[in-house]
Image (cartoon, rainbow, N blue to C red; front, top):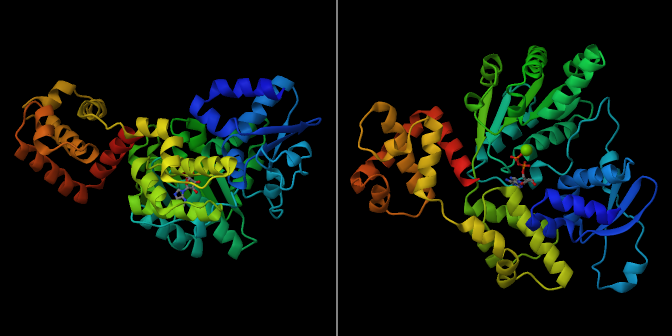
Amino acid sequence: LWQEALEHIKESLSPQLFSTWIKPIRFVRADKSMVYLQVPNRFFLDWIRDNYVARIEQALSTLGAVDYQVILEVGKPENSSDQAENPEPPAAPAREILAQKKPEFFPSNLNPRYVFNDFVSGSSNQFAHAAAMAVANNPATTYNPLFIYGGVGLGKTHLVNAIGNAILKKNPDMRVCYYASEKFMNELINSLRYARMDEFRNKFRSMDVLLIDDVQFIAGKERTQEEFFHTFNALYEAHKQIVVTSDKFPKDIPGLEERLRSRFEWGLIADIQAPDIETKQAILKMKAEKNAITLPEDVAYFLSNSVTSNVRELEGFLIRLGAYASLTSTPITLEMAREVLKDILVEKNRELTVEEIQKTVAAHFNIKMADLKSPKRLKALVLPRQIAMYLARNLTSLSFPEIGERFGGKDHSTIIHAIKKIDKCQEEDFQLRAVIDSLKNTLTR
Ligand code: ADP
Ligand code: MG
């Protein structure tokens, strides 16, 4: 069954991810509905639990026609054979750790690992971090709602969970609830189907702190938005804290109802930007230390410099290195990092082309790519063109004249002028800033 499940999972993952995360997993045993799997270390275990257990369980359950539950345990690397024959009893089943959380009126759904202590603050997330701390210290009296937005893997889920965990720690009796917005939607659908709407409403309206993650998913879903709107109002009027995250600024979420959008703007809106190199290094160091991975300075620098700004991916690289080092019983070195991450780095380091930037900008503004390169002075073209030039300067290493050339042979002073102008406008016009951020996100994803 395990072999079959592996085949199944293989199909749904890139070979890269499969060999990094799934291959090192060892099957230990299975009984009626439990499957025991062994992973190389604690770090790996957390990662698998958060990212792959659901997928593995699904594959097993589909194939075996039983609702399997996966129990992960940390095992010794394969070469220590005495251990392998006689696997240790599952010491810390991931599920139990989660289940040990104190019983509550209803579950908080919080991830206990996401706390403020483990969140590295840097210039990219300082504002959101400070706002989150303020809300955690004084729920419902500072910023309500708090709206946090930012690109994928930049720490939104971590921050909202940290708010919830901090509040619960200080006020164990408070009803704090974390909801991914899809889960909110699913519960709503179920309540509608089984005519249990009263129960649903009572539940949500009795919360002291409601944390809604990735609210962009309910955009375009009429019934869900409607219900969320009423939940929001009830909580807001009762002076309860609401925290919402999204991948975009409220105005930029397509399909989001106007009345919800305006409510999101009642409180404080805080953004998280991609981390700079120093912050990335600090995050890597913290994560390495926490997981007993010895990460030399030069490797930390190399990683922060050469890979993604998505912190989740960054973390993934670190874990991959850590797993590799522990499986081969060798320390992490720069050479190893280069070797292990070779394939990924080639792809990641491919520089964006001006063409790609122009294409994305043109699509966003619904104009022709040729118009970005033309000398036409139409107002509707000038701004997109300047934005494209600005992005070309920021996202590639090309010089002003080189950029000018790719915009239909414009003088380098035209490019400098455009960049200065966009820089200045961004300071005054935060809508423009949001547009540029979202273009940057799309381009660098
Ligand atoms: P998002 O919800 O924005 O997609 P997450 O909150 O899931 O991102 O973060 C992805 C991973 O990166 C998590 O493991 C999180 O702990 C980590 N992370 C992100 N930002 C930070 C930070 N500033 N300090 C420490 N860890 C971070
Ligand atoms: Mg998230």
